[in-house]
Length: 264
Image (cartoon, rainbow, N blue to C red):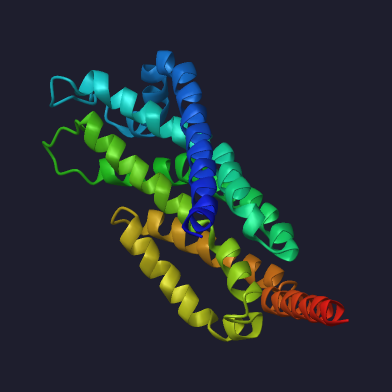
């Protein structure tokens, strides 16, 4: 009896190991393809700041090993980000057998849309927010202060902004999931629009540099994406719970039929 109970657990652990190995292999392959261009990738990421720095100013490295390790660290992060579709597919393949049919139909579009929105959020940060934010920050330096940003600190700063904008752009996916599970409804969300608008600016204030431009550039897209999520969520209101209840009823009726057949 104990052997039969542990067999499914061992099978799941083997499957989990397989999926994790696939994720690691995908990240490693992308990293090996990009590591030769590590310095070029860092130059690409640092371009928005360098363009805004005063003439003659440069970025600096305060640690002896940082000129080597910082581009490598960035390349690893880029490899993880680029392998996101593979990672999400492995997650989907691992959990798919445990999902209902209606859940499977919803998960695939959500995985695709969440990946696209995350990339769009990062692109928005790079092409729109960085030039405005760095332009503001470099022009507010006191007289006599030379702007020489450490490359490691800059990497940590921009990656935090990339993650903030990437995650913030997932708002429509979160709203659709909440309405699909029946936790809330589009009507309730519409009534809370003023609070959502204020909350978007509060989030923008916490996640972006202390300037009005970058805060507004995060808050406005977040609120717009909230409206997009509310619009699409009306097609998924309560479907998750209703369909799960229907599946449970069908399963119970199937069990009852089996029991009656066995009795006969």
